[in-house]
Image (cartoon, rainbow, N blue to C red; front, side, top):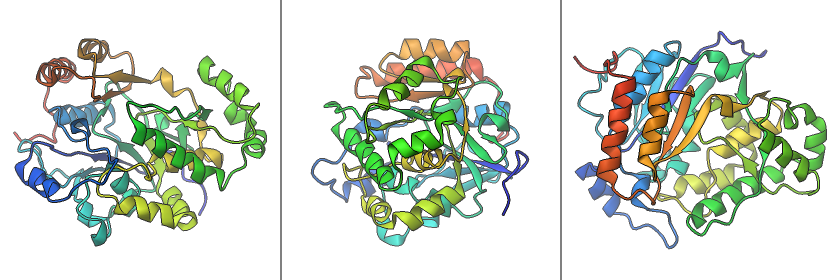
Length: 338
């Protein structure tokens, strides 16, 4: 099959959980997380912003063919589940029965390619990533290749999030089994040293020339342009670690992440290099007033509003974020019931 064109369909995939749903809470309580598992509240709590995700998609990316809404919770009462562009998906629709139920986003993310009817080109959104300004298909794919940013960055030993540090190292260990760093940097030097890279990451890549082995990868924590065929290829190459991640009901230090698939595409050179920071901003919600201000300004096309343990007053922060999104997207979308 030849390369896809920009006119090929592009689907959106978004995952969502309502951590306050009593049935979901009872199901989670029936399974005890193992020692060292990451089961913090911020992994599950709902900020009440999902309607603005749908409003952003309709206002900023009406060209998306279909939205695959992945959840094991009852959809919000306001969501029109009969909308022609909406496909409500449960994990039972694409994950093996022995992996269910799961409370681990890493586990379900390694099986995304099995979502029924998923397009070859798709953009994966966590439910904390949003569109704020009009985006074109070319912001995600060009000539059938994901638009992305190749940057190396050491894995940081973060005592505040030790499980995540281990997981990122796991991703790197898988990649180094298939790609030699110095060979790869010579082969794809135009992508490692793309003149449009942010200066920081251009310099990081230069410094990494001193080290013969990979130290880690920098991946933008935002909407992820993916190819279904990338998933199939990586599953053929590394089924054991992907199956192991899928079996973990809670996030564990032996997991890998969706970023493994994204970095695989980049290490192969199957992407179009770009400075994603021009269109994207990461907003930590430990400072909700700053995040709300950035949302209202709409200086970027897309953002990540990331929950953290440092959020002091969750209810107040949630109200502030909801008000900011309401000021940007006051009109209901067609995904909302009348």
